[in-house]
Length: 528
Image (cartoon, rainbow, N blue to C red; front, side):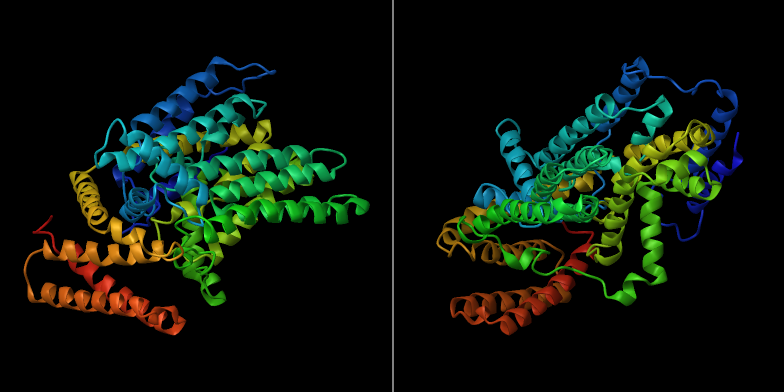
């Protein structure tokens, strides 16, 4: 038994007892201590339980049992903690656009947003309450999760049961636990695409057609969410491995196919579809990037490290130990092209985590910033050896336990959550009933921007007027009403078509919105 592998367990448990607890450990200290002690005891009394199971192409009972347990946790403990992800804002935006326009369209997450809208329309035919907003996202998340479990259960081959269980060790899998965000389908798409890249990289000679299909898979993932564009770095690496005579042909063919497939729907939704996509609300037009000084700051490095430890706990520590122990099997496998595919994919999404500004911070944006769990987990799975896996089995068990415990802990649905959803749905329904006819007469390329601004004023004024009377409240209401009058006047006169005027207006709106939100958060006595 290698006690070195117990150090991450002890370290992780200790972090939860710090006076200023890091965000990555959401469970109470007593729970983390209990898990750590349980793993230590388990490692001593059940040393023979986790021997390697040779698969030989079969599908053993052990896999079916473990998959059933994970699927049960996905279904019975869906994430309901709105601190994770965009929370209420995401649900409001999707519901608002679904009610106004039929489904949500956005350049950043075109496929995910539209599919969630269609899921809501389907569910609302049978069950239309405030919880249907959450359930539509949960349904898509479960479908993606089922796809992931079936894929790793029936397609990816492993030499032992323990090696296979690495694919279940990442807390990044929480996106499949009925999670209300636009990242479940793209996560599944990334898993499938990385597996395809891994398979073609094993070939002795790469062909142009391999990269063409890789380009198509990449574009499909980008339809779901543009963050998948980081797969392009893997495509470039594979292109570099082509025979010199093939490179020019492959570059021209893949570039033309990729750009055609990617730009066609974007141009359609920008210029033809009614309503057109609002460029002011897309990161593609206004990418939130950190300045270089912030990217390499110690505070940001610590943020990214926390994220690594949260969603890639086992894979991160396992690979660190393999690297420093100079395992012979590790050295041999590391040089292979298929291994480099995962490594480059990890670095690509790690670069995203460093350069992209998480507008909501952590833990809210843990999902958008943490896609590197996918190539890192696949990398750990591909580099194992029997000896390294025997040493790390306790670390693996610990990772599985914290996945299950976090799913239980984050599934707690408070009455406040239900109240927030009920109120949000009620306000949006009132807004749509009042403003739908007017919005239909707005030019199609301005509909989304106008509807969002109108809803911004309607929502804030509705919430504020229902809050407890005070001089501060009356002052904020007066400021909002004045800004609303300015919005209607300047939009009607075309003043806001000037970029400088528009930016000035948006800055004022942001300032007042921040003030209103802070007041509403502090107002705990009066609710709608």
